[in-house]
Image 1 (cartoon, helix red, strand yellow):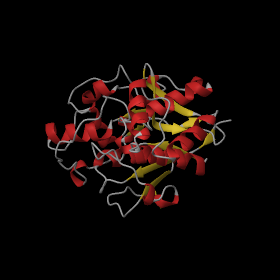
Image 2 (image 1 turned 30 degrees about the vertical axis):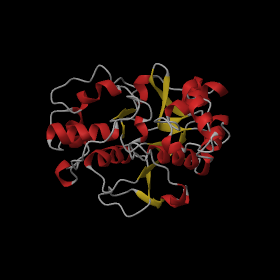
Image 3 (image 1 turned 120 degrees about the vertical axis):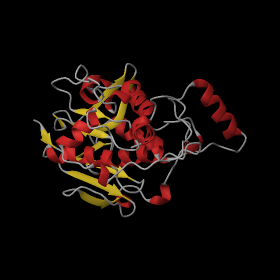
Image 4 (image 1 turned 60 degrees about the vertical axis):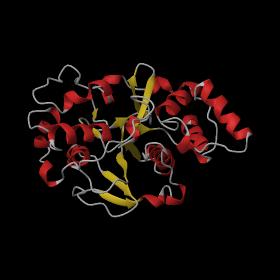
Length: 292
């Protein structure tokens, strides 16, 4: 039997831009309730959203950022796993995940392939008794844990640092250490990868093709199929591209521009702020979903 779930999100980066507003509104317009967790007051939140204190799930005393880039991705990864454990009626969605169809599941599992060898955690639901979820929580409990899914050479370096009495914190480890690579490895370990949805359901347009969604008059219909439930906008990378190429406003005839019209979002009222360039993560896609 298919249960009705609400959506849980986290935002820690100042006012919402129209891109996050669009994604949130897309769930509301599909009759799916949204709970937005925040650590401080956030402006420009769409009407109808339940705003909650993120400390209920994960206190700021446990905040983890990626040292080299300043990204909050490690914290967002840890947060979503705790949220799923505490709130079984929620499905996690990054604030850059657009809802095309309501998020529903008969099995209690809801996640999908983004790449041939990677299951993304940008949209995620695991049953409370899932061994994968239990391991994700256990491995992220101690930020100095050397996790088994890292490449061998990384583990050697981390063990050497640990033996020397200078262990590396998760924020100093390779990009995405608690993100998609962790989820993928553990799902395979426990045989739960069989529940992963095909790529076109949650991540129809790849990270490499993401700019097509922002460019005017670019046809993306070949990627979006009848059962495509979500479109991922790749957060910071998309915001940076829009800020640089289009002065922060998506062209009206782009996919994003058309969706803004559909959901009655005024981009001028919540523009994307221009930011100084930030260091790139270690890989193109690893953990990109957490940068929401």
